[in-house]
Length: 317
Ligand SMILES: O=C(O)CCC(=O)C(=O)O
Ligand SMILES: [Fe+2]
Image (cartoon, rainbow, N blue to C red; front, side, top):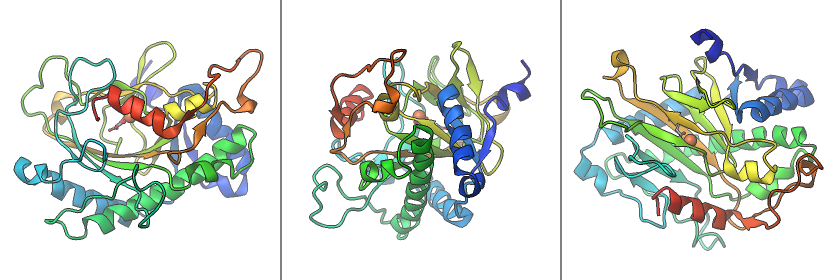
């Protein structure tokens, strides 16, 4: 198969269809998720200025010295702030990933019942408007995520607003990722991000235009995903896979090292991991159980217990 054929394997779905033809949009989106666990969204309507400003601040932060950045290292229970280079290791992987990142999470009002599970964000002294600018991006993606989920609900035969309560005050994370340039070849076997499934409900990913993202197809072959400029990649996470009894699969993906001609370029990407509220019980949807697909999970599990289990596996707590 030619590279072009592979790139277009996941055809973009236009969000502009969503208002006029919600059922048709939901079907096209849902079929892409069912087939690949991934969809490519065109015309997402996000404010480019908000995205550009947040990315510009992110580049400023990662350009700071390791000593300066270390002041903002996340606390083990926190999942907010800075995660230095060489910390995350994918489940069952032998080498750490070649990346550093920052987590922005939801701001909660003081005294909120989830405050003990969802601590406050961390600000950066050297970049005074860091929180304001990156939180604008968090909020934009949070809202877009709900729209995508409402179309998924339609596809699954649920009420359009089914996910609203499950996602209210959810423990979502915007991850600003920096994969440094590779002027000298990295250690044998290390990659920018080793193969993994995402833990959360859905992920909205910007920044994959710089190549490297690959998705493991049913036959075990890796499909490169290089979305057209201005498109957003969306994928199903393990929580939605479990909720839907694997009707919507959480597909393994990875970020491979750059080709020699791109090795002097850093890669920045910004996945938004949409999460349920911590006390939401993930219980298989009745609409996803059938004779051909019996319930795979007799027990329900709270979103927070599921998350803690998985964070331990990848070395983040
Ligand atoms: O950087 C990318 O393109 C993907 C990142 C990713 O899969 C993740 O952080 O979970
Ligand atoms: Fe991922």
